[in-house]
Length: 568
Image (cartoon, rainbow, N blue to C red):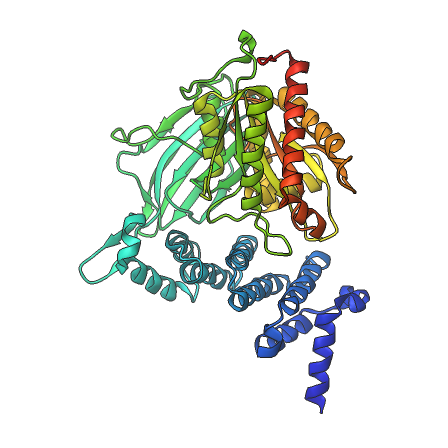
């Protein structure tokens, strides 16, 4: 009888969470853990998606309201486990990707937790088994080995790497695996090059790495202060100079050497004790070190890499910064100041391929909505303005965020417009908004940028620190005007035909997809796909056509205001 009452109580809590909202503040982790155990051991409860989602919402509230709770890292891990269980029950790839995201977030927030290696390992299992993404699986397993060498999941991660490297399907896409006669192991990360750039207020040093590494800073004070990093299980690229002389009044030199069998060491010899900041970047992997102070002279960017290594395109933000100060890559870019006006526009349908974007309550994927809207917009621009329009993708394929603006730069576009559908944890959020590249001014803007960049808010904070240095090279004024004209045209154009068009305004944020564009650019959130009413609109031909007409009017008004009309 007691067991039956407990079972009924659990169902009431899962089915009617709002009735217990007043207890949210006092809800304990032990209660959440107990209810999680009840859910995963009940086949009947697992059949209902709402049971999983409501437990996830309770974890969300607990984490938000009690960030300093002694069990907070366990709560992060168990929330990821709940997403993991939901993805198994539903079979949806979007749920599996959400589980991976929460596992990676937990491991990033609590790298010293006893569950961090489990989180990375489970992320690898999902990527390998449910998403068939062997490259990502190998990356996550390698992170277990490299970042948590004492973790209990290291042996299992090594086994999975051996199994994946032995798979014929994995061979073409996993060149980083080294095969031996009887077994295979993952290669160690490599410090490939060291670059620096000296600006008016600080000097930036970038360590280019082949994979993520554990690299904690250590500052030695005294007459000869130095900052050093021990790169655990990391090799040095052949030909990498042992010493790079900077001698700019702040930093004497940067030294690199093999310290012992388990680590390499990079030492930054400073002229005096100075403040510093470190930032870790992925895709590609970079450790960025900023040393603050005014150099005695401004030096150009220097790159130290093996002499035999050919020049490569650095698609990290730090790489853009380093090169943007001195030189830009050769590309065909039309300068609007010559009177040609706007003749070529690149439309970017956000997400695509293995990246579905946000998913609506009825299962509609953002990537499909974006592509349909982009095709309608492109055709409307061609018909009404007579301009040439190209799409970054014309089918369901995956494109990296940097590939999109690189394409626009390469073809010499005059405008770059990225199309998206918004999303929110609340199904009541709705409205239209338009963004341009800049530092985010609100938490909401930062949250949107984090979602579109597939980054955490903590990552966004680091990104903005780097983005600050790029503002001089971005067309901020033109982009803000373009965004304003499009936003106004959407609100005025959609209001007559649709009820409840909410103007969320023009905002700014550090959007990865806009970074590096050499032409005015904007990112449009045409509606909230997570709102049932707006999800239906986004999927309707009528709404897509009206949004396209509004974008055309916005572009036309922008061109007129800026004196860039190239059509009759």
